[in-house]
Structure formats: structure tokens, C-alpha cells
Length: 140
Length: 406
Image (cartoon, rainbow over all chains, first blue to last red; front, side, top):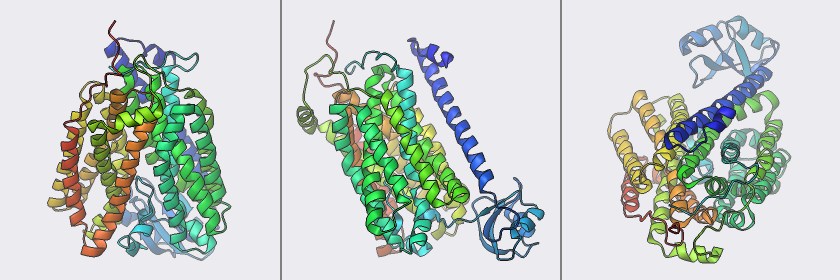
């Protein structure tokens, strides 16, 4: 912090490089806090082994969608849909212990699948597509 | 240049002001950007159709847009700190009480009215104006750039966090957690407390400031230009995934494209602020809008692949909210920081009107013609229009604002 404050001094060049350091420091601090909260939340969100239903199974980083699907289908999983992460897949089964079997198939984490559509994310104005246009309702 | 910034205010150093302002922008934009995540669970839990939640969001949007000039005027009159704090309390109350809204009317009041007013009170216009008036003029553009970048970062980071909250704690408690983020604006607002300095030139009232701006051609050109910004970003953010899917690509590509827009937006906003401190802001704005037109034209005319989508997303991201530090900086530069919150609030309202039209017209023309092609070409035309209208802006400070020679 004292380094940032020293960088606030007048010389134009020094002041601007100090400004960049402040921007970098702020971004780093935000990323650290965000990362910590996100990691804790994800850990809390993991399903216990006995759970079943519609879930997202996350396989190790670097796995492609085909390898992830093949692993999931070694259980009784039925495909719901791919996700936008190649190593994660949304699958369903009502048999107890489904989450545990997915973990045994290689999944590093299993989460409850949340009803979410990319097309419901609001734009800069916060307008939900469903209200103003039929063109997006076709995506459900 | 412009009227002098506030003198050093005891413990409210420029460094602290910038950090607090950036955090407020991050929280304001971030919390709101995740509301779409709650559409499905709230609708399902209450047995409502999507239109109930959508109508509450519509109320929120209208109040947010209309409220900004008024919030700005109150900030200019009573101080930014008070307006930000009251706005944050309304914002937090609205988010938290949404979890307990069991009827459409309650949802309209909490998610619509309370959050809409809260968003207006804690908006960019109030936070950026507070930053602008408390930092020296030579650092103002950079400070507005970092403030805008922080808001962009909030949009980028809070959507996945909101999704994780829902997965970990359920949607109702996730709303309570998000309301705490909004409430965190209250203590931060105290750092931005105080009104703008009167400056060294002719003093004026708010109504005089509005009359003065109203007869300035440059002010109207800024309003027209920022309308285009709203049109572009809202149309693309809302309809790009659908456009990509229509062209046969995977929805995941649309998701990655939006994420890339968000990431590049942080870089673009900050860079624009830095460049605005060194170069003519109006020419930079002309360049940005011209570049948007060119990027969209190339995207629409070339065959679409995953790579072309991602390149388009990154390029548009760099040009996304990079207009904000330059436009707000021009308002402060021409008219001085005294009534910046009001004057930029009006300009921002134009942005929101453009945003509404971008979303609505995109859908309406798709429904009418079966494709987004016409809207893309309208976007290109508007980009060229905005590039042209920024060129003749007289960015010299008004005589009232210009420093008195020693």
C-alpha cells in the first residue's frame, strides 16, 4: 500500500506507471478475494456421494467432451446436455449413489445442475429477452 | 484545463477515493449482471411463467434508466456519499426481499422498484462523477478508465459467482448473499462523501447548468453518440448467442464469446481511460465507433467459424465500454465536475434508451424477417453515424470552466 501511495507523486511518467500499478494491484486483490470466495462456494456446492438426479459432472482439466462423456456413460448416466466447459457434462440418473459412481468414473466434482439458459442473461440494459422478443423464446 | 478538483479532503485521499469508487462500480454492475440466473428458479418456485420475473426486470430497467439523471442531480446537490448510501440500502433491500416475494406484486416492488431505484442511486454516473471531482484533472481520464474497468470486471466475475451461490446455498440464500455485496457499498460511500467544488469560474445553479448544456451542440452530439453505444452493446450481448446458434455453431461458443467480451472489456475500458488522458477524447470516440462498424461489417460478411466468433468477441470487447471513460471525461472536461453527475446521467439515459432499442429491435426484426441481418447492418450504420457525430465536438472547456490566468 505504501508503495502504491508513493507512486501517486506528481512526475507524469512516474504517476502513470504508478497508476498502472494501482490498477494491477486492485485487479489482483479483486481476483484473490473472488477466487477464494468462489473456491469455498464450489467446495460447499459439491454433492455428497449418495445424491442422484440431474447433475453436472466435472472431469479433470484437459479432458475433452468425448472422454468426459465416455467416463460418465460407464455409469447409468443419461445425457442431458453438454456444457460450455469441455471437461464438464450434464447428466441424469435417479438411482441413489449416482454422484459417487460419477466420482468413481473419474469426476473430480459433481454439482447439482441448475436451470440456467445463456439466453436469460440480461444485456447491458438489464432487459430480459423473453419479455421483448419471441426470437429468443425458441430456446426455452 | 477543467475546473480544479477538490482539495485534499483529510483522510479522503485520491488513492482511497479511486479504490472506493472502483469497488462501488464493481459491486453495482456485478450484482445486477447475475439477475438472469434467478429467472428460472424464482419462476419455478412460485409457479409463475417467465413473464412475471421479466416484467419486474422491466420495471427495474425503466427506473434505473430514468432515475440516473435524478440521482445525479441529488448527488450534485446533497453529495455523492448520501445518494450512494441510500441507493445501496434500497439495492440491498430489493435483492434480499426478492427472496421473500411470493406474489407478482411483491416481486414488482422488490425486484422492480427497490432495485431499480437502488441501481440508479449507486450507478456509474454517481460513482464516476464522485471520482472525477476528487482527482486532479490530469488524472481524471485514467481514473474514469479504471472505474469503468472495475465495473466491467464486476460483470465478468459475478455471474459465475452467483451461479455458484445458487448451487451451494439455493437461490433464496444466494440472493441474501448478493444483497450483502450491495450493502457493502454503504461504508464505501462515506469515502466519496462531499459535493463538487464550485471551481474558480462563474458559479451556477443546477438549472443554469442544465440550460447551459442544453444549448451546447457538443452536449447533444455526446447524447446521440452514447445512444449508439447502448444500442450496440445490448443488441450484441442479448442476441449474439442466438445468432451464433442460428449459424450452426454450438451454444457453448456463444457463452465463450460473451465471456471473452467481458474480459476484453476490462482491458479496453482501462486503456481508453489512459489514452483519453493523452489524446483527444472525441477523436478516440470517433475511432472506437468507426472500429465497431468495421469489426461488425467484417464479422457479418465473412463466413462464421468458432475462431471468427472469438476474434469478433475479443475485438468488440476492447471497444465495449471503452466509450464510458471518454464520454464521461468529455462531460467533465467541457462543463467541469460540479454538475457532472446530472449531465452525465442524462447522457447515460440516452445510452439506456439505445440499449432498449437494441434488444427490442433485434428481436422484432428477427421475428419479422427471420434473420438478424438487418439489425447488424443498422448497427454498422449507427457506428458510422456515431463516428461522424463525435468528430465536430468542441472539447475545449467552456469559458466558465477554464482556469483563470494567473
